[in-house]
Length: 199
Image (cartoon, rainbow, N blue to C red; front, side, top):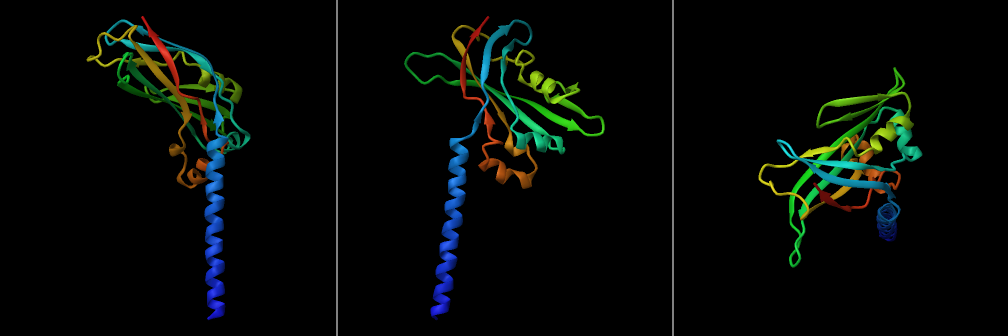
């Protein structure tokens, strides 16, 4: 009975230790997530049918060594640009009128030693000889054009957007996701940024 009690006590302490380690890693991941700096950003409405929100500016994404190694070993990196259209209101909460998700994928093809940035929205792909050039393109925001819904005809100076760019961990292969969620190397994102919307 004493041996059984001892074994149960050891198992209990081991489980508690594992829980403590996992929680510590999760907290560390939250505290030390790597921020992608936004060097500049602006947004304006282009008239036409439909009207389009055109972004301009630049982010400063750099890949940590661990992420770059995964990329060079065939893991595609999926970056998501979330844009929320809101209307300024003085006395009540600014409502979210529309939300866009713009996606770009960064891949490396070993046979050709080329990096490719592809875009879901227009099925386009740009090929680069090195990672530096691919990241320069990925950091550009001026190619992002978002169609406005027809039921928002008066978007303009009373509106603004909120913007965030992030690495989509959910797009990684399933076995990689648990570690990616608790590793600061993989938790890449900008802060949420408010951007005035002009015509």
